[in-house]
Image (cartoon, rainbow, N blue to C red; front, side, top):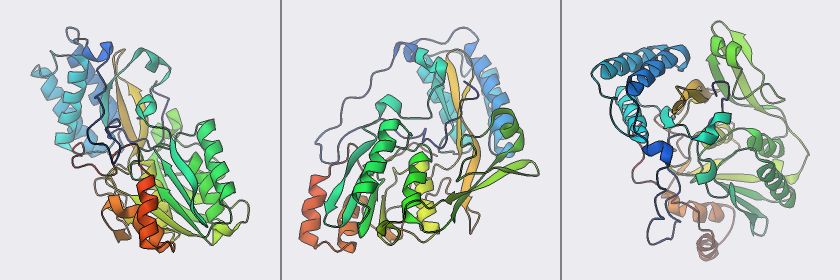
Length: 370
């Protein structure tokens, strides 16, 4: 499980609650047998100690890791993790970590039997369809709405099909308002249509010791190449142009909200920083650090942040603050605004928006504290 790093997935976001227009929430997913099982004698203390050690070894910032570790050891010695169901203990440890220092991905979880092959970085079977909608929403305007970038064959085929069908579009709208995160495979395909020359998008860095032992969540590829710089390895994620189509000149709009997380924030910042898109909505979730699962024992694992992604110009990342939109607006109205900016009359934009009902709310009144 330790080597199964999953890039960028947002561990912090909840499972689907309700459609944008639904009157009441969907039923809460019941806890599994593994989650309700009480911790064994001494298990909570042992897990806390292992977590403390793993944080000091792997967490993206050593100083924060040492503060986390000191807290966990003190709480374990005081018996804080001795009693309760496993899900209760996992939530308690996560809350304790966030009280020391907020991080949008760091999460203790209960391992299910199927996780033995390596748990994912978030979402999985609890997500809506990865592509909720992909169409030509109005003449010359392509529209696509994602739940995550998980790189499945079906999702990759869907992205390529949508791009091909809209290759002559005058505008593209990417709806990431309830996007949970994922990787860069879909992004690389999209970027290949939007840029006419190799273009730096964002930079990433992680500890060289972690890279040497486990590799990277994002291995070397035509768009990624890791190089050593002292005790770190760094890379610039760049756009590599593909087929020359009208999309290189198309207007691009990205719809964002406080539920837009992780890889979706990577995507939004890449397009914003390079001047290729207009972001419409509100500041994103603020879950920056990438990483993957690390086993703590047979029943617990931690989603461990091991690196950071940051702007090629400023060197700043979006952890805790999110990516700011270019056009600030109620995220529920973001599609209407994008359609209007693409040339659609207001009344028609409102009607088109009403036909697109995301599988989850496009704004969270309360997110997990970071």
